[in-house]
Length: 283
Figure 1 (cartoon, helix red, strand yellow):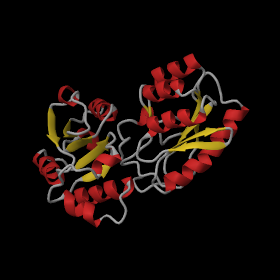
Figure 2 (figure 1 turned 120 degrees about the vertical axis):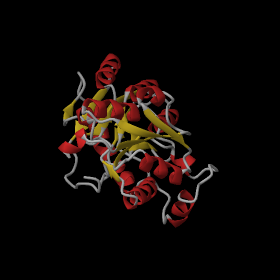
Figure 3 (figure 1 turned 180 degrees about the horizontal axis):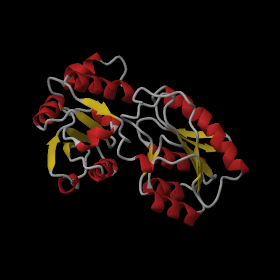
């Protein structure tokens, strides 16, 4: 896809957080100017300053989003930034393209919903591409990322956590588990990683915790890629979590220097482990 970096026809579908801003920055470094479809209920107002062409649409306005993508001449699009699962099935009005899509879903999980949207975009002549395409430097290689490696107790918890996390990720329920002394304290569902860690802290009552965040067994890198950042470390610090296990090559680390600095300052160990060679739908 090297030549496509120098062509027009790129779009960004933006959810919440810094992910969309980082994609815009990475694309700009490759000479790509993106038109942005920003989800009104989720995306940051900073997008108006970060991009020249920004269109705001409601979460339920799939038809309007497609119309704007065509208007901007978009042929390839990146989807970046979380859309809270519970909002998707809230009382936000769904238009004539979104409502039938929701009704046809056999299951209402992330893969089913966003996969269905990707199929609609493909039918419209818009290819949804790997969301990490412009962010490869943010994907860690295998190894210990911090000054301190996990000790033997943390390593055992990380290994146990990976087994559990892979199971729930394979069911598309969540991608994070929190472990203490080889016991699973909390499993992520719709609430997201931060709230899962906070819930684990309440349940553990001061017992040291280990956090494990994994990719799905067949991770589609076009969407729902695991992300950690400074806020992850802040939440872990408050929760008295001492180690973090992530997947190498399939986890984005936002503001990595700050993440490592913050983790080292409070003695949190971070380990990126190789993934099983299963491949994914978007690769």
